[in-house]
Amino acid sequence: MDIEVSFPGGKKVAARMGEFEILTDQPVKFGGDGSAPEPFALFLASLATCAGYYVLAFCQTRKIPTEGLKLVQRIVSDPEGKKPAAIHLDITLPPELPPKYDKAVVRVANQCAVKKALAHPPEIVIRTLRE
Image (cartoon, rainbow, N blue to C red; front, side):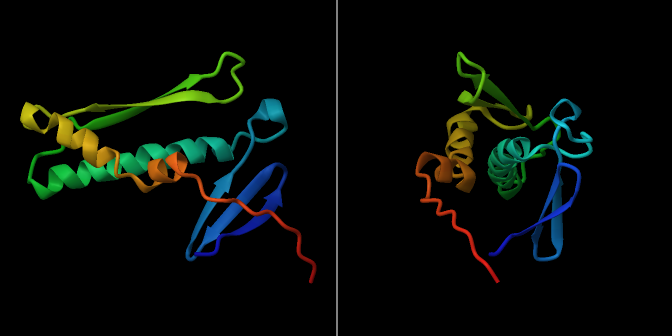
């Protein structure tokens, strides 16, 4: 899948994927309008929502009600505060989910494609092109 990036103004950067567009911006303190999440926040959200999808599918497949199901992602910064040193995903399970499924829920959350890509990062090639 190709993702086409455009620059709609200010510090905003937009990514078009098929019929969807995702807008990013920078916080006001970095010269943006603060009108959309910054790119790194979307990167982190992709991890949380991917793991969340797998947990949701696990419950839905077993017809387990998902009321009360929640995933909270917490970032532990490195000592300099410049990058994540750890990412914690805490899954609050619905009361109807028997405790025997706790380990299985962790296993399915670990199937997240974003997590796998972080664990085994692809080569990223950056180049310039001229028309």
